[in-house]
Length: 124
Image 1 (tube, rainbow, N blue to C red):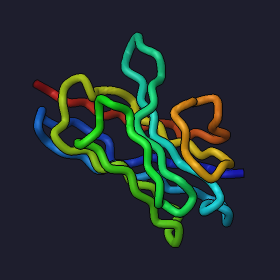
Image 2 (tube, one colour):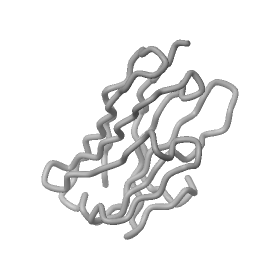
Image 3 (cartoon, helix red, strand yellow):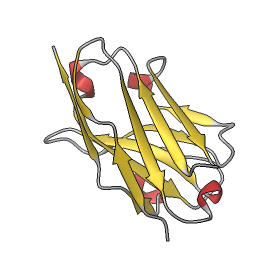
Image 4 (tube, rainbow, N blue to C red):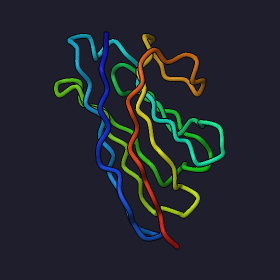
């Protein structure tokens, strides 16, 4: 069992930055690929980024490439999403997720555990 708790959301102006953190419980964190998803009002949940067990392989959705960076610290059971050059269309609830597989994936059905989400609002 893995429990995930996100933090770091908030209100920021367009062009600004936010750093989301996801703290995971459990001793087997390093055996889970981790992902970030987001859901805007009235829209489907969408993939943002994922990272493999060791952190050596990352995957990004096209809208965030070059602006967002995902990383993990297995010693601290933490995964980070650094978000730069934020745009109003990045406004959403951001969710952290864990998948019992080596490499991350964009498919939400592949993830076994989810956090409660953290709100990110980007004003224009």
